[in-house]
Length: 215
Image (cartoon, rainbow, N blue to C red; front, side):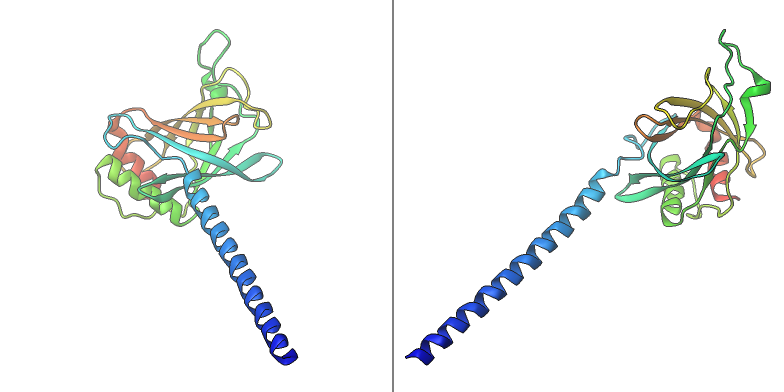
């Protein structure tokens, strides 16, 4: 009888241990699945439009690193259930290009490479493919590995201060192989941590794709 009770006790312990182990695995699996879902949900859409004469492209930015002269961000959003984006380097203390009276200061306002864009791999290739879909133009689907260093005009009355919350406006002129600069309007927002691109008009689309593909 004692032997039978001992066997019964041991079987009960084994069942309990297995049950606890499975519960732990289930909880971990559930946590991992939830985290993965949250990560996907956190990505905001690149655009809410499929057809437009002037697309507004939105990216969240995450600070990656900092030097004495610049801050490097990862710009990321989502298009067709895929992450899209690139790395953005912004120089510190970009001088204002608009005078207090509202007039542009062409001497102070323009700076080559004040903001630079670099591919970070798959997300950047996805971005180029997204441009092809939105612009309805053919693309090779690969972003250039060369850093894009456009001429930048600072459309701001104040100096850019990346250490404080603020919204800064720019105009970009990208080199490309179409024979005309690819123009985009840009916003760097250090309050909501976003990087935004606005089309000037649809006539620059081929030039924009050429700039980002490096062809």
